[in-house]
Image (cartoon, rainbow over all chains, first blue to last red; front, top):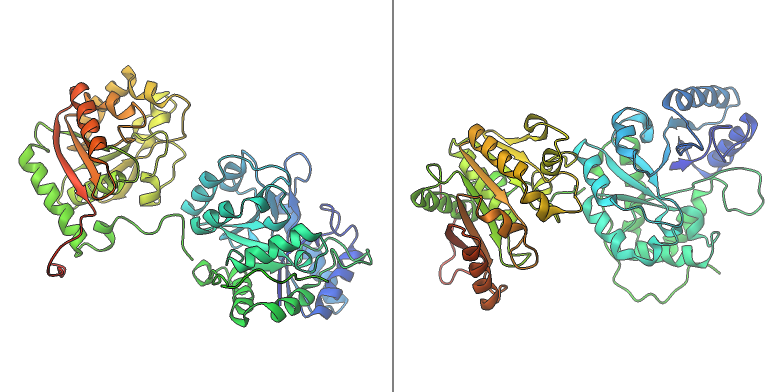
Length: 260
Length: 221
């Protein structure tokens, strides 16, 4: 399995706080069946700078440590960029690390409680320069999850979306869970990722546990859809936007809850 | 994976199609009406939104360029611009940037096809009608007439806002695009009245989306 969204690099943000913790997270991931992790530290102006050099150095150090500790996971550079008025400028200036640093997929998050204006403009301009926007965890966004028609328009405009594994497992509350359900039913989700931040806490919120989410999906969702999620993750890692596919919408009544 | 634009205009993607042939016929008819001679600036508008004026403007510009003309397509719809979507071009600078003198023409122009340059709308301003009615806009049109054989201008629809009326007199000719089955007769009449009041030279109307009765056409070779 591939995990495209993990806060794995020690000390760069609110994720792993030490090299030991990062190694532990990677070990948990490896046991979960994850072989590739894209490290996506937050990039937020004024909060977490995380310029490309810092990210690359951290990835290199962690990979070396994992090899020494015999953890069979490959770490790739990436970032989770908070959308702001200067996102496009910063990207064009080379300040933002794309997923896998291959230049085609940019993982972005929105401020949790508000919707900035001009998103369609940003999606368009990024695609003009060959970048596919990947929107992190829309199901957890307070405003966006009440406006799924907007998410649909963005997806039709070319935006990929990533749902967090924990949302599907009910870890982030009922609304996120229901929203994740509905997004998947409407064919508005392209990939599942862990968004893991640590190895410390006992509840499963933010440990790298993708397998549990996939198992849950396999119980409720057509096998083709789950395959699409896996293949899309591979397409991102392989830097191939043409291989990314939007899953079919599911034609059934929303009569089931996915947690409990 | 679909991108922001669903493909280029049909005259570019499928030049042998029936639709492309229809646009070439439109081009020929306009030649007889005097475009490429004394009609250099051709404004394309409609009564309401959704009638296909941008599609018409983009395709007409494409077939004119394909015929060897040096064409500029100007997106003067500063409210809901879509020319940049049709050709997958950046809209970071454009007409609005030119009108506030932020950039020169050479910086605002992007080549869409051989022979076809595009100036997209640029960032949406708070006062579109005012900008289109400015002296600067008049100067710009004169400058563009000096650089290009044909300038095709996409504008907002006539009925909802005044922008198209403001520009109509500055254009050498106006092409009115109407969608069959969608536009109300009174709206079409009102659009024509507004153009007459603006002193526009209406060179013709395009009826969009009419179903062909009888035999289906195959594409021409």
